[in-house]
Amino acid sequence: MNLLVLDAYAPDGRAALRGAGGNEAGALYARTLARLAPEAVIDVAHPADGDLALPPGVALADYDGVVWTGSSLSLCEPDDPRVARQIALARALFERDIPSFGSCFAAQLAAVAAGGACARSPRGREFGVSRPIALSARGRAHPLYRGKPPVFEAFTSHQDEIVRLPSGAECLASNDWSDVQALCVERGAGAFWAVQYHPEFDAREVAALCRLRAAALAGEGRFASPESALAWAADLEALHREPGRSDLQRALGIVPELLDFDARTQEVRNWLETCVRGARRD
Image 1: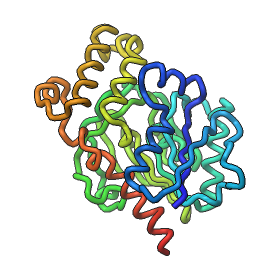
Image 2: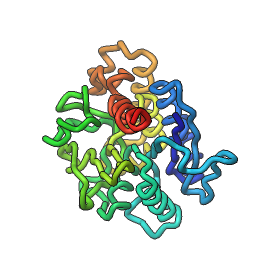
Image 3: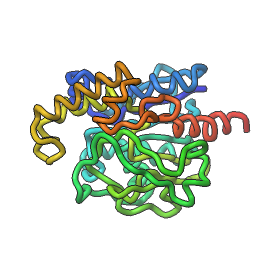
Image 4: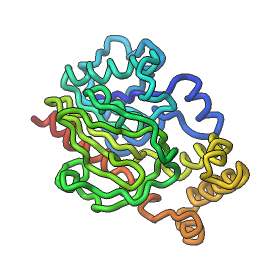
C-alpha cells in the first residue's frame, strides 16, 4: 500500500507548529497512518511550497490513497497561489480516480475543488473540542462512520466552514457550530471523504495549538486571558501524559473516547479499509 500525505501548511505555518512544541501536520498524519496501516509505504509532500518533490521515479498515479492535513491557509482566499495549487491538485486527484481523505482545511478543499464554497464562520473559531457532532441519516449509513456512535465529540480548531456543498456531495455530520462537519464528494474511484474536525489530533497537539494561539484565543473570548489559555494547555498536556486522571477529564470536559486512539481515529481506519484496501482487493 502506497500512501501520500499532503501537508497543506506553508513553511511559516509548519515552523510555528514546531515552535509551539507540536508536530508538523504531515508528520502527525504519517504517524497516525503508520499505526493504522503498518504495511503501508508513506510519503509526505508539501503542495503549498510549489514542487511536490515526490521521491525519484514516483508519480501521483503510484499512490493508492492521499491524505490531506489541516492548514493555517484559508480556502476563503482561493487566489493565494499556495491555496490555488492545492485546489488544482485536488482536482487532479479526482481526475486520476485517486481516493482522498482529510481534516479541516481538507474538508473545505474537497468542497471548493468540486464547485462548492466556504466562508469564515460567523461564530468565530471552534477550538478545543467540537461537541456534540451528530451524524446525518446519510452519515449513519455511510462507511466512513462504521462503528462510530451517532453522536460524538472530536478535537478541533477551525475558523472557516463549508457554506455550499458541490453537486454530488453529501453532508455526513453536523453540529451547532458548523452545518457541515463531514462530507463525501463522490467522483468515481476518486472520492474525497473529509471531516471538519481532527481525528489525528491527540490532547498534546491541541495543547500545542493553544500555546501557539493563546493571545488570539483570548482576544476572541475563548479564554479570559492568554495566561488562562496557557494554563488550560498545561492541564491538557498533563492529561495526555496521564489519561486516567478523571479530575482533569472533568475539569477540561474531555470524554474518555477522545483519549483513546482507536475510538478517535475510527474514520481514518474506515477510509483505509473501504477506499484503499477495498480498492486494492477489487
